[in-house]
Length: 369
Image (cartoon, rainbow, N blue to C red):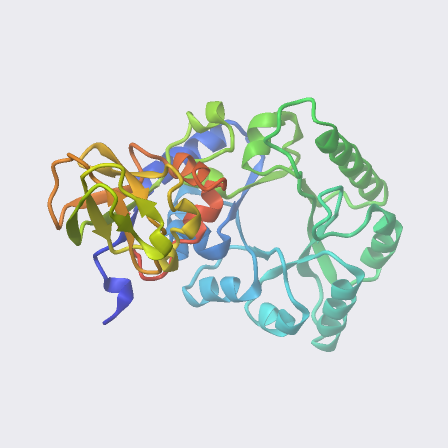
């Protein structure tokens, strides 16, 4: 059986809501600000191709993925607009070039490796992007490397399309010392490059949250990923957006459970009274981690809250349906209209990014337009 065609579980993606989010976010930008659409990890688990095609129809300027194979997949699907690869690996650089992807260069090692390959192929003006580490301490050149980079640019076979960094706390309440220090550092980087004649280069530092929190720092472009999915990491900002995803399952069996009966592996839950328990055919292999077990996480059964009980299994989870009127075969909404991915994810002390991106391939993606 092709599990991707399994209708027991499905993730519904509303492309009209995606369009709404695009329009709202674009309205917050200056007219000349470019939008880089971040579609890494299968567009945050929502289905890369459909999301990308919708963004292109809406006028997205540039796409960005995490790793080279993600970009290659888009090229195979005839996506022709510029695609940035945030985390290119040296072993993938030949394929990256073959597919006309644009690498983010973040260290002397990857700079030199890419430079050597480009020279061997006698390519000139290959488009690249430069990533600086201004305080997140993930990937990026040190600010101590500015002079080295500026010298390299003068003699490189590259066309530098953008220079960027990433704020570590863009959603945090202002004033925020960590972000302010990063911004100061990035301003120095920008000024140094401009003083060295790099004036036709785009600069960008903002993600979705940053667009709301630091509108004066749009520079030439912004990067939007989770915002297209309806989240901005702040309750007030979230109200302007619409979550695009709903995760649905069905009831496969209902049990009558007596007071004192145990449910799930390791006697994970003990009934405090006579009740009914429904089994759903979705588990941690599908992205609903064991962290939601007995965590006050609930799902929507016919408009009523039904709490997850017992330890979540690989293929199943159980819910206490009590006196809720429902039958085997009825639809259940894990997250969506009544219980957003943001609210549901908080029950596991995580974020909607992780929840949605973790939804496995057995869950069918259904697109609504």
